[in-house]
Image (cartoon, rainbow, N blue to C red; front, top):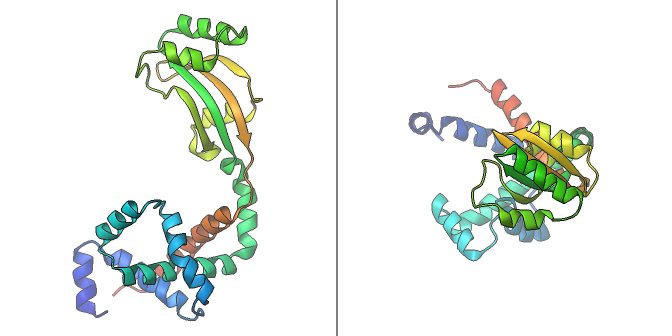
Length: 228
């Protein structure tokens, strides 16, 4: 790509993205091509990564990026080559990073009721404690959009995506335990842990952490690249 083209893309706000992808191509230059069986997996893996589940979603996504079928194959194969490079380069660091992040990757399923009135929250807590009502029955008594917090069963949700106070409360909970009403968002909230799902070092986690480390590698390489 010549200097004029780069300058024009920079004027459109794409200069940084182009430099990033050129740097990625440079890092991939010495990597072997994909084996035939890997090529067969490239497009399905790309759809999985972008959470494209139906043909309609795929078509809309391709149209939004102006991709042809040939473009799709090239993009998928390039992304898979990058993933494999990152997994190989950072093999030792990935497991260490997973253990460091595990507490954030653990998932929970929990039930939550938010109401504005403290007395109502206390009454609901007593009904739950004495098993006079279930969370599901109490949900049905609340008007729609009763509060600012979601009401109902939530999850599975990674701990790292929860507000810190809620995550800490669920972390010390036993499944089925209902906590007394707590002030939250201008009202009162009842919380019950339904299920705790410890994170397992899956291929998905391996891929995501490898790509995260790969992004850091790209940034380091870009910082060493003189700008024209």
